[in-house]
Image (tube, rainbow, N blue to C red; front, side):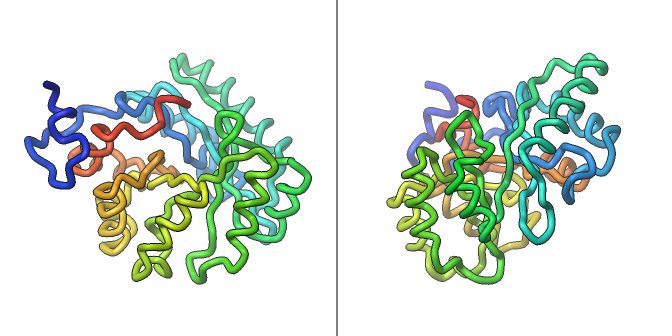
Length: 250
């Protein structure tokens, strides 16, 4: 029996061993690596440095997801895919054996609803739409937007659900969202307390209750990479590997 199978499905972690790298996950599907178009990487040199470190950590594929926000980052598919192509060329020139794709992280605003109506969305693996909501207030019309995404043929994927404080005392809302068909992407660095103790606590509970579908680095720069490297020693990352999140399928 493998050390993964001995803990599968159990809330308590026993016989824990730190992961050597992220090769069991294989794919990072949330990052901000296209230089200069959002609050992520500032230069292509910084992007290449981060990608080199991803490669050393055992990732074989990166799906970078720049912000699209009506009031801040008005990126378009053309801007994002053009940036992806330039970054791919730089990766090739560096001789890095890592696959690079691009989608987007949509902010839950009026622009997002228009993109859904027009079916003009960048997706992960042709079907998942990564979106985030405000950290301040729960969105009033989230049920309708989820329904509209599904009717349009998309699968809604909520970014970093453990970072929304308005649901901390209403954990049943996570179950309600799951029952409506929303998948959850946990930020890996939440497991080392990068976003604070409450986000870490919720992240661990979500792992314990088997609510996590994907994990992602949400990489913006070297500070996130340092935390990602530290996270290899976390028990709950090990448990996610045992549960079998969907990253490697992308």
